[in-house]
Image (cartoon, rainbow, N blue to C red; front, side, top):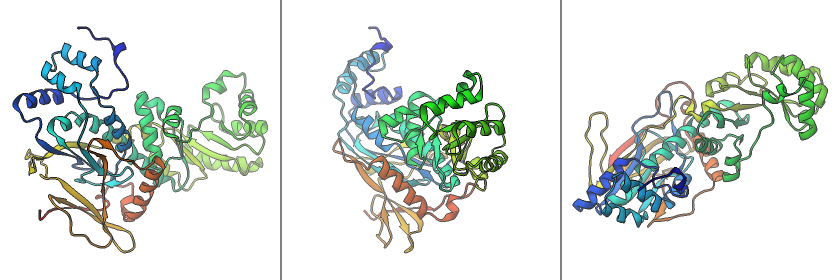
Length: 436
């Protein structure tokens, strides 16, 4: 039985998984444990070095992928041909539909070490095959969102354009653009992200366009002739000062913006502002780009920069390309189960979480209760909400609503938690044992 890449159906997410999930499934079907009711939880044991909070992101994508998690003929033929599954498992997978419940922290919610950000409740068989899909989506998107949120904080209200598509895999680029926008970025260069998620898109020209023409002035004139003066001219292909003069000469003082992509941006931004003002282009904005991360953006806070373009650091999580989330079994048939491995221990039992706040609205701590509910106090906010009930997705917040949710969450944590320097998590997570 042959297998061809050309026959794979891209509508199914079933093989976005690891082989051991299906070998566990086969054994559980054979020994009768596959139908035991289980609870799996997703959490981070620690935050990446230097981080004081994490950002939940990817839930909307994940719910959609789970709804398309189907083993069609092509997938089953591949698995059988490799001897990965037997006929009994193939028959079970052919009818796979997730019929359980999934709840968790909303997209845009902050999380900390031990926060139960996703809970999957179903049979062992239904839940175990989702492990890799769940983690690949949440680990990637949450890492990007956390890095992007730090950049947004560092930008102090100045807009940031996400432009990292050329630095990562094509589908990762779309997911990264979504995560960055949720975190507060103003726009993306990625058109598929714009089409799929309605994110504002931006982009004008690269150095290649300038080099294509016989002169820099010719390149600027061509761009302005096509796009008008409401565009951004890239002025550092040759000499920046001369590039700015030519840009204003061609476009006039009503040119929307210039972009600088190289050099000492701190020095160049100040010099460029002075030159633009001397040419009468007082309203022409300055956009800077070139391997910017949150620390580089923060270093430009006092400079006359109007907008930033960030790419590589965004799509790689600014040094933390994964959120370090894990997917662990914590309950079987209502009985807590605990993994006791050194450095990888888990807390058994299904968790409930609330965030506590002062009357002023400042978050003080997160309370996580195993096998029960926390005693409610004024200012508590329950963190978990349903995503899938009885196998059916519920209506989720829009991307814009999730973006606003994160903005409010960041305002709520103590100001020390927004620092870019190393330190403790913004608020502590307190684990309690419930009464039930």
